Length: 308
Ligand code: NAP
Image 1 (spheres, protein in one colour):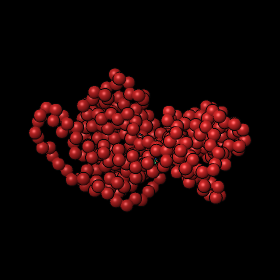
Image 2 (image 1 turned 45 degrees about the horizontal axis):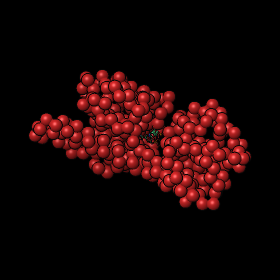
Image 3 (image 1 turned 90 degrees about the vertical axis):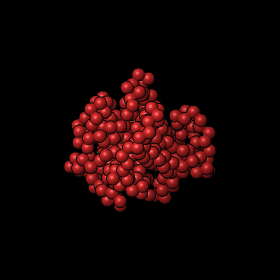
Image 4 (image 1 turned 120 degrees about the vertical axis):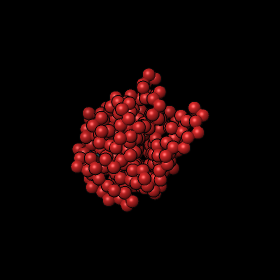
């Protein structure tokens, strides 16, 4: 078995160490040293140059080094081999920790207390128990599902919204366009963990904010393209949205003159909600390769028709 590796990391050593540890005895070729193209069975890549993957005649699967596959979708010659997105336990755990932190900060009015501290104001604001706070997750997949479970374990009143119907213990599940209105109407803190597709691009817009209870808060850690940024600024000005915690943006890095930077009701983090760790990422890739070698279907294959 030969695997071609192309990454965007400057420090490649931990990735090579993890490949050696989880795929012992296998040949690893590091782009651009491709060698004989017919030898390559698997590609583990970020942003391969268009046509590179199509030039590998015996490719069995393409593993994305990132959770999103936008960097592969843009290749007009993407071959027919299954594209497998990065699903790995470090990424899931870090996203859940980030979402729980943002929800707890919004629940406990951390922005208000920081402002009060800066002004030396001792004022106890209204307190709510977690079960009096309705948290809604747009997207109940690998990341949204895990965050929803952990928020439910903290006793928040959790609901989720997905494309297909679901049943998850400890929360109410809505689906499809029909379920969206009821889901939004019962959501105080809205968390977006949707994939970027034609159906979800720009979903966080003025019309959606208007369907939330007045003063609801937003957490977006999916993709910048989900949010219409000017609509959020208007909704914040009008008080329809009371606060937002944003990890992803239409333009990254966020331009220095962007109004989000200085907005008193916006928390900006620089796209750090979740990240892959070499050891657990390669552990996941190796497990999928072993499945394929045992004749089983790989896990986490992207359905390009569905869009994710
Ligand atoms: P996933 O496993 O594919 O789950 C996607 C979820 O969204 C599923 O529940 C799916 O419904 C639902 N969904 C998709 N299209 C929908 C639609 N049109 N209407 C309603 N629900 C829809 O995705 P994931 O791995 O959890 O990733 C979620 C997001 O996190 C992605 O945007 C990814 O790029 C982002 N991400 C961000 C960071 C960061 O650092 N900020 C890091 C990693 C990932 P079904 O269950 O019915 O299929």
